[in-house]
Image (cartoon, rainbow, N blue to C red; front, top):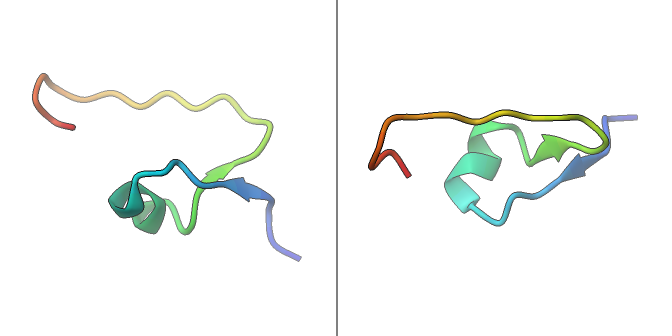
Length: 36
């Protein structure tokens, strides 16, 4: 059984994080200006 994940709604990001972010966890995303 895999970990329960939540899709971000950003297809490219969901692909990079194997389908979504882990449900119930704190996640910090950062990048330089203009990254996203």
